[in-house]
Amino acid sequence: MVGSGCRGQSGLGFASTVAVARVLGKSAFGEFCAVQGTLVMFQAFAGMALGLTATKHVAEYRDTDPLKAGRIISLSGAVAFVSGFLFALAMAVFAPLLAARTLAAPQLAGALAVSAVSLVFLSVNAAQLGALAGMEDFKSLAILNTSVAAIGLPLIAGGAISKTRRGCSVGYRNSWRPDVRPESPRTETGSGSIQHPNL
Image 1 (cartoon, rainbow, N blue to C red):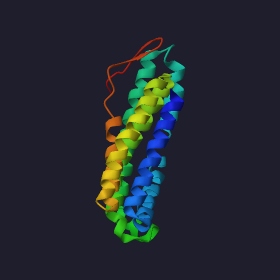
Image 2: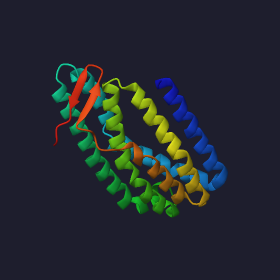
Image 3: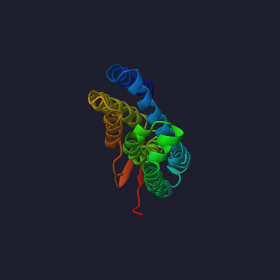
Image 4: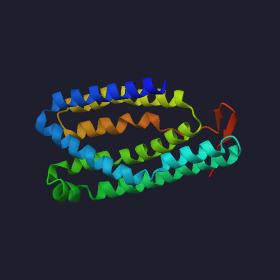
């Protein structure tokens, strides 16, 4: 199931990349990739490795101390949201400076600012997926990854039809939104349930 999910996500991601490249052309596609590369760099810091942290501690405590595992899931999600928001704010504020000095392309400032919103969704998503991995719920992981890629394909390709980098960035940002949702009060596992206390 995990392998199928990874193959589905990779295949759909490749298809969206090809579609965007063909619609935008070499120059605009290169600029779009520059924006995405900058987003990936910020996401590496915004995520704070919370996905790995959630995986390790949820796997450790899900059977012996479900309440503690639930607190870890809630805390990692909250920290991921705050961290993602702060880095998104920083990226949006400094977008003109990044575009002009780092990328030497002042026209990319708008696309960078639009893409910055994705950091919130990406950070929370990483923490939630890490928690699912810790609970060994690989079926849900595969379904989520494939769903995000399937939703992202028409959104990103649709944004590319506008012939602008900003349209693609909006499509990429929105493709992650369905995967980030509030956690339910109880998450069922194979050996019981994990409590999610309110912070």
